[in-house]
Image (cartoon, rainbow, N blue to C red):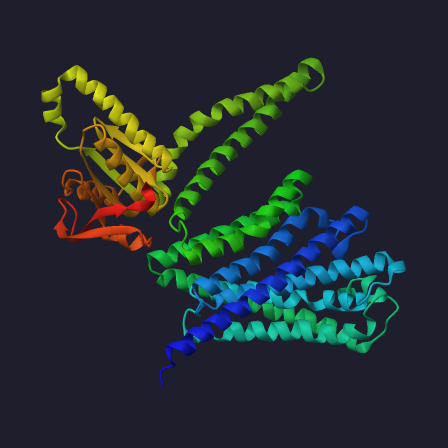
Amino acid sequence: MQRPMGDRGASRAGTRAWATVIASVSLVLATGGVVLLGIGIGGGWVPFGDPGTAEILPAVALFAILCPVIGWIITRRQPANALGWVYLAVGFWQSLNMVSSGYSSLDFHTAHLHLPLGDIGSWLATWAWVPGFTLFTTLGVILFPSGRLPSRRWWPVPAVAGLALVLQAVPTAIASWPYRGARLEAASFANGPPGIHDPFLAVAQSMLQIGQLVLLTAMIGALAGVVIRFRRAASEERQQLKWFTYAALVDIGILVAWTTGWLNAPLAFVSGIVFGSAIPVAVGLAILRYRLYDIDLLVNRTALYGIVGGLLLIGFAVGDVVLQAAVARVTGGSSEVVTAGLGLTAGLAFAPLLRRIRPSVDRVLPGRARLTLLFTDIVGSTQAIVDLGDERWRGLLTRYLATVRSELARFHGHEVNTAGDAFFATFGRPMAGLQCAYAIRASVQQLGLQTRTGVHLGDVEMRGEQLSGLAVHTAARVMAEAEPGEVLISEAMREAIQEPDIQLRDRGRHELRGVPGEWQLYAVETVSSAG
């Protein structure tokens, strides 16, 4: 029997309420954890028993804060997506682990305070990290982005992840309970608290290690699921998976830099901010489909600047070694002037080398983006030249160009190309493009001119400053179908705009010259928010 609409509405409201409660509790715990970590670092003792806590604090704090926020947003926008609850759970356990570790460390290092529940904090710190880490590295991977498994055959992955969680958390929690407090805080549980000879501790530690191996198996299975999902995915889901993969690779690169000691303290702090936020932010962008297609442009720019920076770094290093050796033969020492000169040369070579490398990178990894494309020109410009004469027309055209550029700047449009009185511009948001088109029409009418405008939303390839692709031709053809004084938009634009203060008139289906198929077009009647 189908559930009544009222029951479904109440169920959804209850789900949202629970999500709000979990997210709120997690944020309170995370805030407390940040404060305690700050107190510990300022007091000269080290929370978590990790000498690098001061450097990784941004990563720990941001991850604990962003996960419940992203989970809460997903549960509200896509209630059926299980990833929302996964990230809520990850955020809760990460926050609980952070606050319990900081609180128990404060209790241990300020023993005269005798903080209440300090022993419980030390006990929680031994195992509370397990659920969040396990969920994040397994279900958070294989369920992305739909919240479902790639197919029913992948059920062993969450089952193995659950087994890993139990093997790590349960024996650890049971074995450490009798020794909670100062003795447990004084040493790492993985090595066993000193002076304690308990057979069950050895068993628990062995099960912890077995659980970590089981977890590794589940993680490999989750990654395999992502590969299979990517091979089967449609274009939009591929873009979502690209966001996740890009963020994961960024985090892996930061981990490598940390472990090899390539980063000084300021860079480690900044990289910690990126490390803690990369995957949660990428997941939020991908699932909510905000600027989803920008990932190709991001990959393109990362490859371009990485190659150019790498070549300059190698050239600088080789040149410094060679020239310093030559200087040493003459003067018997090194020269800072040589190093400074090489650095200046590398800086001056950056832009020319970027221009040389960009075409090759664009061919291999063309940047793609989903943009709002606007084409507009003056109706009857040739007749206007005849009526006004060349000199008066030049003055009017100058005012027209200034008017259009003023409206583009007001709505954050990017002027791609101008030819005579025709403009081609792009916008990051569909509504901004529509508002700008409507505002241009109104402003140009005050000059005694009429325009025709076409607006389309589509995917384009970005090669340097040039845009190409079928979407560009489609937008130009949409403009060609517009009547004098008309703003015409495509079906893709209509679907992307949800604001209620827009009135459209159905202009029927059209064949656009040079563009396959028939296209449903709409004339914009009113856009009150543009005024």
